Image (cartoon, rainbow over the protein chains, first blue to last red):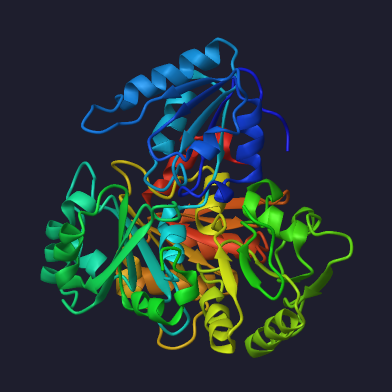
Length: 249
Length: 249
């Protein structure tokens, strides 16, 4: 496991929140980086792996503010690397699971900057686990689909998503009503067990359960904020049988 | 991040292979465990985190041999914990992504043994990444489905799996012919880009690409062994544009 190289950009998954879920490779790269470019939803104890003299550049969206445009992030990564710095681009979860890591890799490739991707523990698996929900389980769910409620381009194929054995929907918070109605309209029974996991694996994690038809109202009632994952499927009912797993129990 | 407790079982994801993708929490638990119960496909450098005096119990399947039955593994975990030992149950990838972690957690719950799950980096994301394939990518794939070719109970819903934007199929090696024919029969175009990733993130990783209709023949020709993941979808074609990612390039 080598030290980070000068003039190279590392696209690094920071995991879901819990700083213990950072990888050894990510910790090593952070400890050697000259520049760390990071998003919202990175735990302070993860950033604390960076050395005191590293430049920490925040490019996330805070409160109602604007996030830094994707093209600006590309330009920043390229210019920092061209200054001969070892750059860690730190992303919540995994860089390739709705993390826009592919876009950043393509921009670096086109600019001729050396880069490397370091996968992270995805929130899509770890947040349900911390809520007591295995996303797959023999005899209950032999597949799991990850999708995002925020997407550009064509609308999601709701008929396909409604047919998922387990569906994990990222960034579901603000569109929960719309999403659950669409799934039910596409054929998913309104009684399907569903859960919303807010800030999964963080100290302030919260989990709420309801049938699919009622989960949006439940989340509104509890003022669920971002980040939140929606989990839909029979695996949600395993939660009652695995009480030791639920971090917020 | 506390030390492992006596009489407790930790169901720990070891990640896809590359020992740098082990989590900090997993490394800490391994360093303090009295007993480590592990499967096939755990990198020796991961096991090296265990202390010299720890009991290392192998319960995987080697060569043509029989694997230890799931019920025997449950009994072993329970008996080791009842001896007052801190037990790490180490699994390739993540315990809840086709890792049977849910079954082990249920058995421990029923036996009244304290347990904890420590998520790991899933091979389903990391192996494609190490082959230069982002499983999601803006404008190309807004969702990804993970499924397994080995399942008990009812046959997979091929129509659903054929409709996945990105499909990642675990344990695909021995059933590749059957699986690709089923996907094409269920409506996935025969020309869809596909790749097989053998031993993803390991030093001996190999990747082969072909249209869906030809990938089984290609894998046979190259004598692809286990573990192998099949990736199906337009994201596979990003690989040609991200040559720096491919570890075996």
